[in-house]
Image 1 (tube, rainbow, N blue to C red):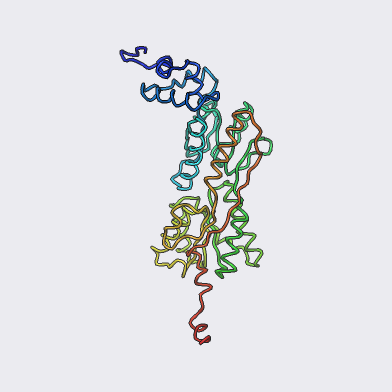
Image 2: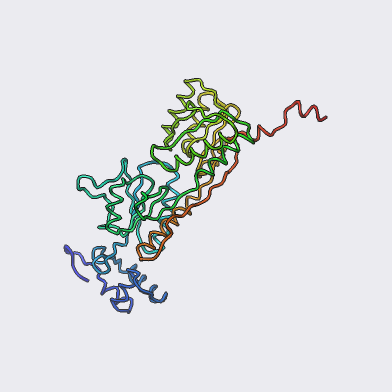
Length: 355
């Protein structure tokens, strides 16, 4: 052991001696750079725990030119949808011996002015880019440096060969609106879009418009609003529609966070859900099942998206081939907020006529 500011610091030699193996073997186990027998790995890990050894990150970078970190850049938000996404990515990173570094930005991350983005090739071996959290100039810069990148919920610019993992948004949204029209018998259906420039929101809007057109329901711009995938923005939009006195049968929120905020805001205004106004969402977040009434929504396999994105990133880091685009299907989850139970429930007159 060596001394550091008067304190003894455990070295890799100490670990090797305690485990009864060479320092090279300890290094291979800690850095996961080669196959080592499970028995030897267990001996080394036991020695590490007993001695309290901490791997020196800078030394590891010098030894194998790897940081042992991957990063994700995403917008600063409290949206619960991100919890499942980050959990799945983090679990995959840990299973591959990596740490996940997270940078949440209130604006698009950019290298403008010569200032590097906080997560880059100096502190990570690859980056996951969430939606439009990084501007195109920075994407071009990182791609030109052959830095491993994978995009989530956003296609890259056509000139950049960057793998992406996406949702099938349009078909899911169209199926949901078809359900509102054909089963729940709604026609005045409003849509709360997501943030400007968000590709998920764009394709959900296209599905909404296509479903209306397929049933000869004219598109009404007055029924277009924004929830921005935020509860407070959705609350503002609902309050605006209520103040305008618009006739609305149902509201398709851009995501579940906006949908749940819409339900609460409408209920506080004295509206019954779904008797007065139906509300549906997108994502099938954990809490969507527990709000009153339970939310009809579109299930998006968020965990699978996260794992696939991490898998593709590690393939790039190892120099292996990757899929250019991975597209995950979505499906409707019917609960009570859409009002279809009311639509199919027989009326009192029907019941009396059948007697």
